[in-house]
Image (cartoon, rainbow, N blue to C red; front, side, top):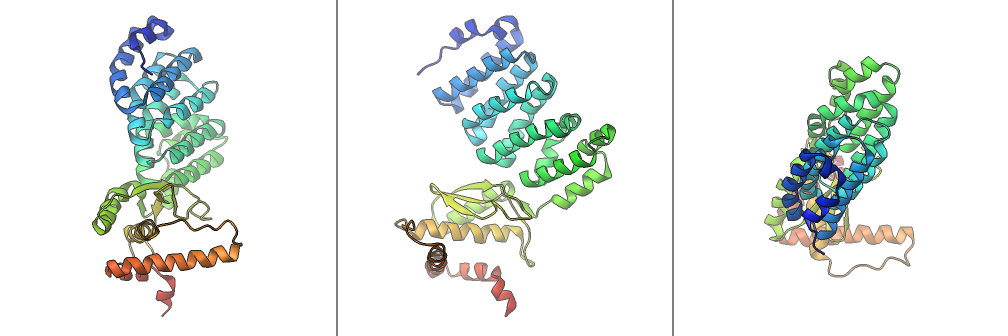
Length: 323
């Protein structure tokens, strides 16, 4: 399926009314073609049409056209439809200027969050914030680079909820908090900071695993609740290794060491497991026992090949601290 840009422009009302929109579309389309499939391009152009119909102004359409190819480059073209759907829901609740600012924040969010599922969580947080602290959204988006450099999505969510609840009826305080101008905002942000973020550890971790097994491993972040640990457990799905989006230091060991231990353990499962274990007919206790023995088996195999891994895993084992 090929797309004729000139044919699309001829039927695109906003491109006919605004030379800026037309110029932006023509300038962005080549980059969009490089990073999107034909279906992705159709979603991209359909999104522009839907935003045109929303009546929120040309700046919204221009920001969408300019920013989405970079988002797709970072986390894939599924982000286009998810973003358009979210923004159309927001269009009745906030101004076009804020929506344009939201689009401008998305490449940073995609780069720092690193996964479509986590990115969708960011969009959901924005939707929730519009209902709870609408005056804080614009100033927060102005500082999103700093916030996502220091906070995971879960930490950002708690930071937002604290500000929204604390300054629900204090509009000036709300603006100061989300502008990072209040001591309260900085104090809560400092409290929520984790030791090392996945996005900062990803490249080093990939090189570390490649050095052992001379192959590439697909690493993705998963965002959970740090306090309850819900959604915080590493797992393997469709050949990809999902690890928490941040790790704190543990018992004097740096968070990067925890990432190395976690990544090496998951990689060992991939390398040393040749067939899936059929656990459908096992009860919960049986599954737990099988998982325990499988963990031990793959680590023993890895240690036979790379003896140095023994010290890495033992240094983080809680029973080792007790003896």
